[in-house]
Image 1 (tube, helix red, strand yellow):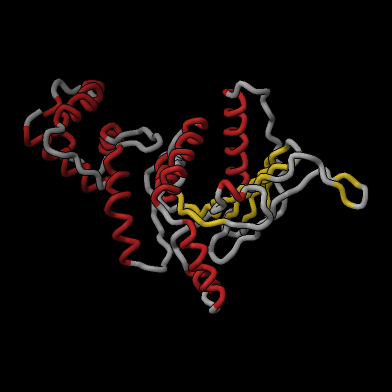
Image 2 (cartoon, one colour):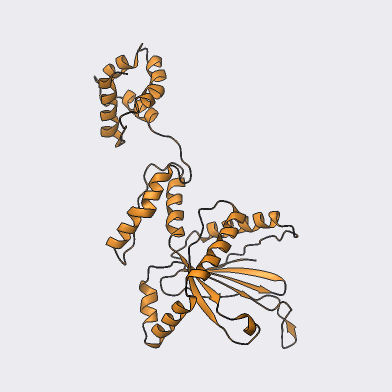
Length: 305
């Protein structure tokens, strides 16, 4: 392909589709257009381009643009743009717009893996608030609640359920070694005493999810002679944190409960379904007897047990 012919292809594609075909991509144009040019009865690609110049907005032009575009979609396709978003673009936008929502428009994303990848990227780098015990080993079993709080990044980009679990364990261990979980609890306690905690929680942008787990009694409890069959942990959303995930064990049974603000999570069933699939994947890979997950969505809350 002659340089003039390639230059026209560059100009046409940029003008009509907003796509930049960089210098050095002549091979791409030749490989994708040569067959079509022959179908149209042209001996060479240069002759075909000469004909294109005569009718710049024909159906043939539309077909050429389709042949030159990348008609595929996948999660985290082209790694470098996502790294640029993570390291530079999103931090700069957040810094320039403190306290404001960030709206991102994804165009030409086919079946949607690109915007979902972007959502996972943002979610992974907006940490969850996770309670952790402050109790020393010698005080285990004593009455009273001694907890601190950690900021945890969630490895949502890890596709394998076991890989995510191991990554969570690694991140948790690192956070416990480097953070001071008692500091956040102390600050929130001081804020509550002076009436500052509620405004802070309503405006903060550090977290958008709260996760907690509590080991319950391994033996059944009774109330007025009646056996308590099930215990569910309920923690209502607070401030602008609209998703609370809590886990509670009771009498050999583990219950997971999602307490959500419905307006913020209209597609909560998607999350519940993903949790169910992850639970089943972990059960299949466990040497113990698999335990099925049975989600029971409720208004405002969803439970997986």
